[in-house]
Image (cartoon, rainbow over all chains, first blue to last red; front, side, top):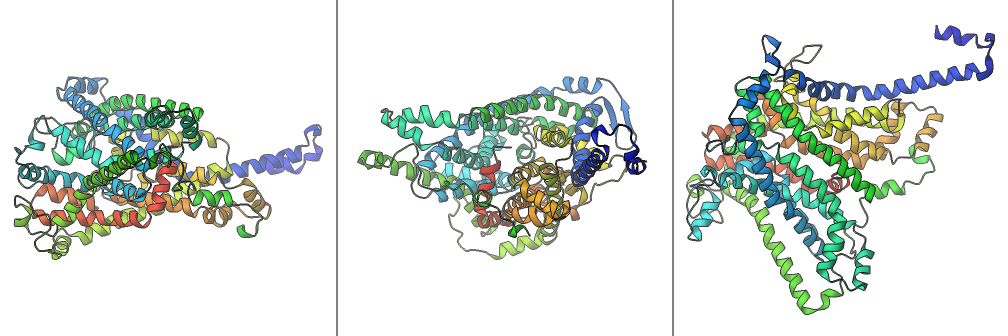
Length: 316
Length: 315
């Protein structure tokens, strides 16, 4: 039909817009879009199947009783009731928040300080970068199993050091009060180098004339640090703060491999509980409901993150 | 063809070889002048020494892994431990390779990593090319929908993602216990598309238009202009994909329940939890499993660090 109407444009009684050219342009645009979407198609299919659809489906399954054999059945809010009545849920949230807060207290400023100091070094910069980054290269499964061995009460490195110093040995992963700290120290060890690299990059971007101007004004080392260096990397620090919170709230591998949530549920995290609901008890509805709660908590942080990146990129 | 076009690619090259000022002796917090005073020089060397000492905390655990693997079991559990193995049993590494059945798990990991690499490169490059240069109607919305998945934490939709792989929607094909169950979900990588698109955006549109006038189709433009000009960024994306797949544990653990399909990280978890293998062999297994990413990192250090600093924050 299109070809036919394109064939007789001269018969048209209103040629004001020069129809043949307009049609050609339309055809060209259609062609261009078709080619464009042809190249987009694989990605669209992948995202639709493995991202967008599952995200949307999470909302649906939360209100269903889902069975791998029998299929789905609507159950209203009962999955949420189950989750909210499970005494393990508040424990898991408390543990997860404890890990997040301890992680910030112990690990958040370490990379900032390291980056500022390394950046001042005239020699050995690339050695420091490599040495501090190396733990990040290790696969998480390796670092977790390695540290599980370090924390071992009988054969571990830490008790060997304590013994060597004549100090009482510890029960580490079996001590309810110590176990979370153990996970946080491992996780800081394994991740701080990556964050340090990002701070180093941010520090490279601080213009030298700011320091020179401050020096001329008589500002000492600490005042330059406080009034120039830190404000200049404040944006990056805020973004990495939010990213660290989002990352640590999804705590799973460390307790799953090291403690299986123990001792006495002291390291049971939200994602671990979600995993147990889904893959130990095959209660997919409850697991999806807990996932949805986690989703809303973390998306709140993600929106904060987006807002911060936008503000930071505007202010620079 | 691309080479014959009069074009200033210096900006691209500058990007490709990294931020020029990265290692230059630029003025930092402390001026060189200040370091002339003896007290400040002493403080500088003190900090330098402290930083060197601190690298022991990151390097020693790794040394402890590689050297622990050389000890025999009785030496390994001896208290106090020996700093150097009394006798370096290099055969432990071979024994671990055999006992832990590493040939199989290594092969599985390589299949997963290179399959993921090929699929992700094809899907992400063509999508980024389309969004950057072909610009179809609605492309901005599509890009937004891609990038917004970065904002959704993957653990939050773990269950529906798993159920999707149990049975693909509409076609009802199960992907559990197949390589596709790991490869295909990885293809939905907003990070890759973002990185590639921002690089493609720097390639001048004139170049594309000129090729278009010469009669080159989109596929030829992608193959003969975009890809040759984007080698550095493609290298970064490839290394990240390879190392990322190598390290991955949780998703392969969920999807590949058959032992003979499992990659090395899943096998390590299973073998160490079973506690039947002697400790020194497990540690040798850990050391072997960390070696490929460490070697890749040492070879491509420059590209990786540049990739992290270029993309880490702007994402």
